[in-house]
Image (cartoon, rainbow, N blue to C red; front, side, top):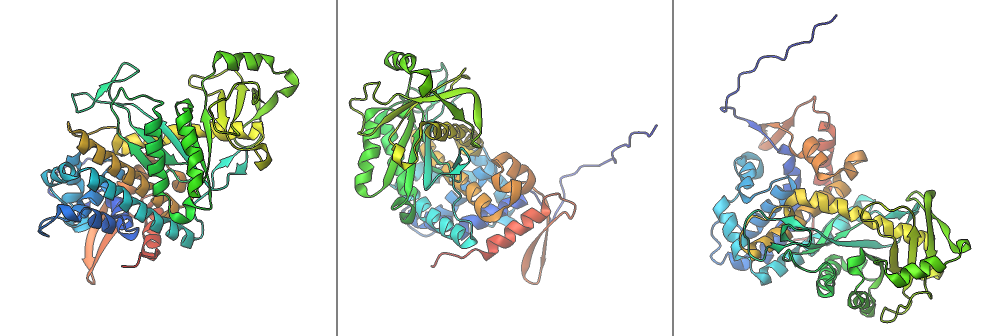
Length: 456
């Protein structure tokens, strides 16, 4: 029998030098510079630095976004970057970062959103230069044309009294933000911080978040490209669907696919559908879904007040908790919109729950301040952090890392330790030769260095 080997004895001290942790997070700071996030933030927040002294507010905002992408949860976590100035440069103190968040009013917050849209255009141009471009969403084994925007709300618990925190419909206490993600890449296009008692189906909030999301898309992708708007049943308000249709008047080719609560008229229509009109439902790979069937009820249910051309499709199977068994869509049959395909296309909306779950580990799962305005800025920087991780996957990574969730990216790449050396007027980060993902990280840095930079 072979004896179990003992671990080597270790003596621990805090007196090391020339060693850094979270070395992979330098990839995020450099990507923020390469896509123009840092420069755009500096321009947007220039009024907050009237005397040109101290830290650049835009650089502080970018560092906060990097910190959140790296897994930080509080403003004090900026210390991870600040205490490693050899890698991350001069980083603002915690009080300075607090003041920036407090000084960012609604006008400055709008400027931050515009700056993020500007950086997104650069990132998407870089993706096109990279050769891959923005990936397509797949459903039923087919690629969906254009862009797919998924909207959903979530509850964020607060454990102390904070401005506009309120009781939630689930009996908790906190906020009820509404968020819009790009299904193609997982980018966080827009978000609206709301009190915990905000309505799930408030049409005005849905309209605001949709308009902000559309403003985030580069012109070349906002016009002349199909844009599918997906929500759960909270987005079935007639005013919101009418707005989606009105957007088309601005030359934006939007269509909707939204869940719909099963009402008694829908139940009666379902019972009246002959068996021959039920068709097998599909899985996401295009194969038949066991024990599930799809039918169309258009013409059997009163859709008065909904946009012209609205269709209603239902699925029957034993549901899991939270399943959406019916939906509205305005995709015509002539455009490849069979009931089977549209149902499985809408079911793909469930991936927004994964984006929200990851987003809660990237900033908006915890809000730092009692002030609602500060927390609204924090949400915006959290969306920027999610974008940085998305762009990292699209522009710099291959294989399973190109689809990895933030937790995996942090564990394998961002939190890696390295030895810091200098030579030939260059800073070198030396990752252990035995680190399993060292090659993937160095390749990512090389690709980052080769990205075309925005002019100016």
